[in-house]
Image 1 (cartoon, helix red, strand yellow):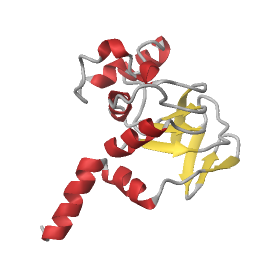
Image 2 (cartoon, helix red, strand yellow; image 1 turned 135 degrees about the horizontal axis):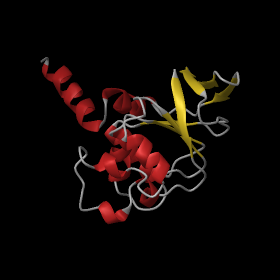
Image 3 (cartoon, rainbow, N blue to C red; image 1 turned 90 degrees about the vertical axis):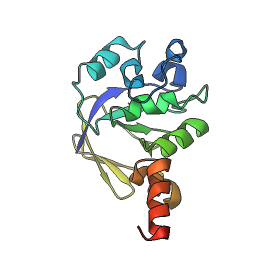
Image 4 (cartoon, rainbow, N blue to C red; image 1 turned 60 degrees about the vertical axis):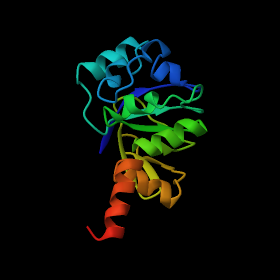
Length: 165
């Protein structure tokens, strides 16, 4: 079970997720501290380690729009967050898959901060309200990359399987 820690609106750009002024810092071990730097309460919550892994951020439409900077994904991956949005910007979604960030497309999601959420098959269940919502599943190949932890671990695993090691 995962708890909703924050709710965002539509059109959350990569500049909101990872502000451009921090682009000199690109190491995945360093970028998380700047996640949502301009949303002070969310940034503080994340940096104060008040958020357990697999916590949920709910977002509206077009999450991750704007530039194609992959740091917007790596900063969220650093906290092992689950991002549930009505839909995602195309490049952000592909970067998320490549980095193993769990993203869930759920066009009708309804949730509030503090709600308990459960993923069951192609349904997102709000255990607090009792409502369930259809998930638009990623293609199986893309989901396999996320499940492996990203494109590099996925490729490594596939190479090991082919070589028998």
